[in-house]
Length: 87
Image (cartoon, rainbow, N blue to C red; front, side, top):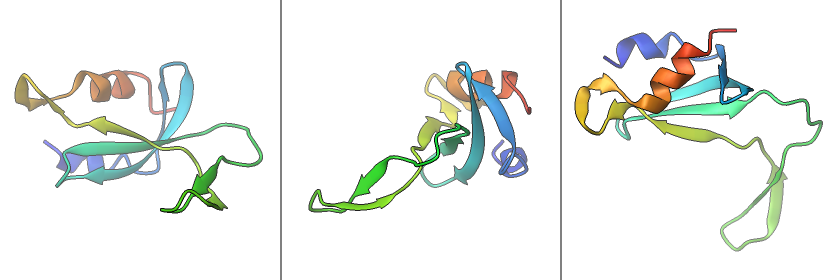
């Protein structure tokens, strides 16, 4: 079920009104990581483990891969993402 998703890495999708790029498929965590494709010149500042500003990074979103009610199906979030692309 997850093997076809590997081919989506780097592809852009419209998800909830915004453009997102598939960044990674995390098999052990049963998750799909997407990053926004926004036009902001500087991404938000990321803090280190002590709360000090360290560097700028893009905000990522992690979607569950499997449907909690049926592990053999994709989650509603992944289905919504796939319905919006690729762009």
